[in-house]
Amino acid sequence: MQDLSRRRFLQLAVATGGVLAFGDLADSLRFPRSGRSAHAAEPIKIGIIDPLSSPYKTSSIHDVHGATVAVDRFNKDGGVLGRPVTIIEADDASKVETAVEAARKLITDDRVDFLMGTFNGDVALAVAEVAKRENRLFLVTGAHVPELTGSGCNSHTFVFMPSAGMLARAVTPHLVKAYGNRWFMITAETMDGRAAEQAMTEALRAESGEVLGSISRPFGTTDFTAALAQAKSAKPGAVILNLYGWDLVHALKAYTAAGLAKEQIGVGGMIGGEQIGRPLGYANNAGIWGLIWDPKIKSDSSRRFIQGVIDKYNHTPTSRCYHGYAAMTQILEAVRRAGTTDTRAVIKALEGHEFDGLKEGRSYFRASDHQHVQDVLVGKAYGKELGLGHYQLLATIPGDAVAGRQVCAL
Image (cartoon, rainbow, N blue to C red; front, top):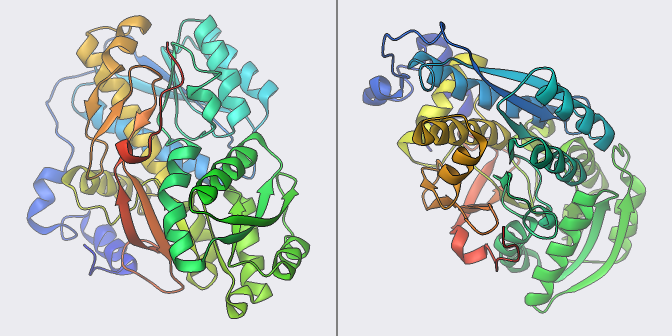
């Protein structure tokens, strides 16, 4: 798989329906069909709340793509408990009020059985409160703020995303090795940006490092020229971008335009991924990043997931596709284990459960705080094609090594 270019991989997949892409694995990659009909019973409804109209919109669409591929897989196998599964989407626009209204509508009007999604930390916390009050399981797929498994944790919310602390502790030693331990930070003026800045600062201090300066920019900023000029004047070893979505895309384009690499000033941060690399193109992608998932992971389950996304959407999956697919899979498998859609029974089926997280190491939901403990990857972005994906994988850090202490008792 590593020797196969992304372009050639997609050509083969489109031309042959994916059969040639994996050779003898083709039969195992097809989703099973049991011949049973799942269309006579009342559907199991999953409400997905995501910022489909914000600077996170591209990533959020991929969240829905991955979840849809998972639902298709279950429905082709007869559904869950003999019932079909359907998705109802809602846009939170990265706004708390919009998200709360969407969650209430999904529960009251659409009568969904479960909720998943969100990206902004404050949005996720607000939806978590609604879910608990209305007795609905809520699986957070994108937010990483520590409050979700700390001061704001609750019995009905599970967090699929690695926490900011997990990501920062994984990537920081590699940033320090490559660029040194004197950094300048550019941070989004959001709860998520502040969480990333705090986590990266703490991880840097553990490496005896120093933050030379920091500047914050409003969410949705498109011009980072002045911020990068200020960073350059501080003469750091690296500029750390506590940004995501289109904010991060615009900042990396400005980094390239400013010629900071020629000044031996590196770049990187807590989280990147294919959803960032693709809008940049190979030429503008740079730096060392924490990664959630990568298409070069060698496992049969990862390959099945990749093939499912290619078959339906004609693109290799991003880590946001991974979140949607893997999180949806865990909800539906928990329903099967519980034998019911009853919220409390499904919560019990998830707590402490170890599962195939489409990675090399263990994946499980910590029973005490509902954090998904999982491998965190570290990748180096390259300005050239590297087969499947924009990153060279530098390390796979086991989740238990970076998960940190449990601070919430449910």
